[in-house]
Structure formats: C-alpha cells, structure tokens
Image 1 (cartoon, rainbow, N blue to C red):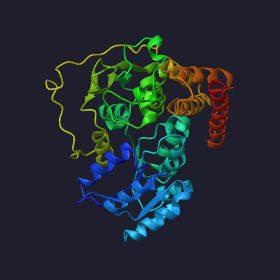
Image 2 (image 1 turned 120 degrees about the vertical axis):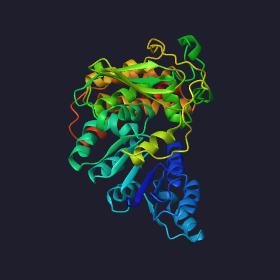
Image 3 (image 1 turned 60 degrees about the horizontal axis):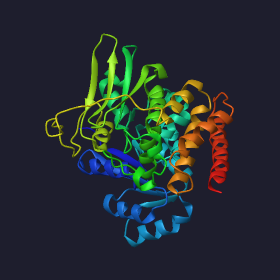
Image 4 (image 1 turned 45 degrees about the horizontal axis):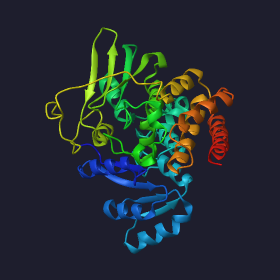
Length: 393
C-alpha cells in the first residue's frame, strides 16, 4: 500500500480549495490534510480546521493571527497557527507536506508555489499567475528538483492527460484550448458597454471566484492559459490555438504529427482535475459522474473566438510573443483592472483598453530573475492605479 500522502491546501477557502478538500475527504486511507491556508477569511479557515484537523493553519493576513490562534484553542485543536506569506513559503518547503495544492488567486500565490517546486513537492497548480508571471523560473525549478507538476486548470489538465507522460516530446503539431465563450458569447461591443459585475461573474458553466469569472467573460482567462500552456508544454504561441466550445465538455485537444487528435472530455467539475493531480498516474474516484453525451444534449459545437469584440485574447498572444516582462505586465494590469471593475470604478470595456494601453506604455525588458519580474509587476500596478484614478474621477 502507498504511504499516506500529506497535503497542503493553499487557498483552502476558495472554490478550488473546496473541491480539493472534497476529493481528499473521499480517500481517508490515502490522503491526509496537514496544512490549510487562507488569505483573510479566518472564520472559514477555522471551520475547515475543525473539519479536517490539520497540523498547521496559515492566515496570510497577519492582523487575523490572534483570531486564528484563539479560534483553534477554543475548538480544542492542536493545529499550530501561523500568519503571513513567509509562513506559507516555509511550510511549502517543510516536511509538513508531500503535496501542495497551489490555489491562491493572483500574484500573491507565486512565492509559495516556487517554494514548493524548489523543495520537490508534488505540485497541483491552480495558480495561473505563477506561470504567467514567472513561467520560465517555475519550470526551471520543477526540472531541477524533480517536482511532479500537474496543472489543475481544466484545459491544461486535459492536455496533460492526452500526452504520454504529460510531455509533448516533439510529437505534437498543435494544442487547442477550449473556451466556453463566457456569459457574453455572441454579444457585440455595444452590448458590452453597460455590463455590471453581477452579469460578468454569472458564468454559464463553471463555478469560479469573481476574478476568474470576469477573466472568462473578457476572454483574458483564455489568454493567460495560452501563456501557461507555452510554459507547461514547451510550445510557441503559434502552436497553441483557442476554440470556443459552449458546452464545456471537451476540455482541450491535442493534434499529433501523425494526424491523430486526442481530446479529453468530462463534466465541468474541478474535482476531476484535482483527482488526476492527487493520484497521477493512477485514477481515483472524484465524486464526479461519468459523461453521458446524450443526456448533455447529444451535440458538441465549436466556433472561433471573436477577438474583435474580446481583444484580451489577442493582447495575451502579443505579450507572449514579446516575452520578457510583457506577460508580467499583462497579468498585473489585468488584475488591477478587474479589481476596479468589480468595485464599479471602471466599465467592463475599460478592462482590455487599460491592459492594451499599459502594454504599449511600459518598456519590455529581459526577465532573468524573480526580482525583475516583481519590479515589472509593481510598475504595471502603478500604471494601472493612475489610469483607474483618471477613469474614476
């Protein structure tokens, strides 16, 4: 029998964290949650600690540390309380865990993801920014340490499943990421002018957090995934395509050199990809039912993305082609623009406009260290704050 796998869930109170904990709880003989981490939702973190009884709990917001410590004591738990991002990094590298579910949203998740890769952990990567901002650095750490990296995004996980050993190995002609098209598929630009945050986060197929839902609505999510795929699978942007597939049942396709195409299909539920990540190369039950294509309507539709109406995808390809600090700019500009939109400070169409203007204004330089990338990230955020203040005034 395999040894018990000790798992750290970073971003435990989010939707991916919840899915991961659901799968883990189905296999108490294989998996043990040893570390739970959250950003600032201390009550939600305490509830998870009472349920899963980890050895360690981390709240990134250091002001919440007293509440976490008191709550654990009141619950009679022996769970050790920690606070701050440095604690996340330390636990990612420690013998407290064998596997890290990296599900912290945004650039905040980068440091602990790199720490886990450096330490040779099995890394279930749901943090897009780690690859978009620092893909070359992360993949170099994975190669150096022998870490097993399994992407948890449904699209990249699908590609991973279609490839022998999860690698292209010179056999792949093209990979094709599918996109649902988001809630505004078929809209023209005029229809997008008055879109509200509530409309943008109402995704037709996936249950996701507000930031990722808005990215799906602008198609920036798919643009970030193109950059991720480049790093994960070692292909240039010219060999990575996007197809809109509204049913969200075909999660991605791989075209091989011999004319074969393999696709991975399944219901839109992140527990499948998490089960793949936890058990690969084995298969375990995830709580997700098998796919009945007839029950799902008996048809699969595909169409090209409308990049005139949704220019974010084109911006991402341009950032990937530019290389260097451009993807870091793209990511930071988009994060700040989406945040401002959710706060009703800017309009929906201002999101790609701000990103495009920022990419044109900020000078692209070589990105050969984490320090350079973090400086680029901050420069883009300063640009975005100024632009948002002008739009909001």
